[in-house]
Image 1 (cartoon, helix red, strand yellow):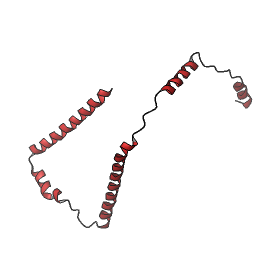
Image 2: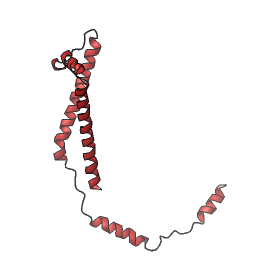
Image 3: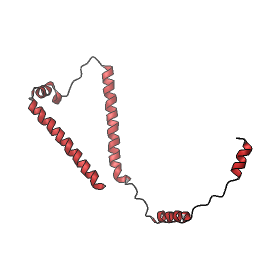
Image 4: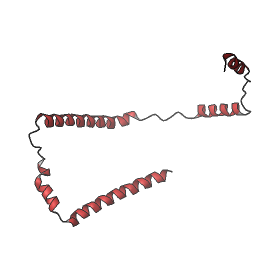
Length: 128
């Protein structure tokens, strides 16, 4: 198209008028929004302790990660020592336990997971 044709097409625009009732419905929506109560502000003072604890935890985890990485890369020849409560005797007793004991723990873990899932589904379905 040539510029003259575009100018001719655009100059012949008709005036666009809203449909009947459109202005009234828009003004009614504006009045309804204006009369609505203000939004409830977020309780920052109550959330602040949790935010501080979460931030401190993240910083502590990051510091421990850096310390562990420095230890691993600075002295790779030294073996990693487990805490005394995670010593070989604990692992040996777990591995020597009969399969029935392991099955009981697996069953308890599955039941706890199932109970958690059912509770969360019940709580969320009650809201809808």
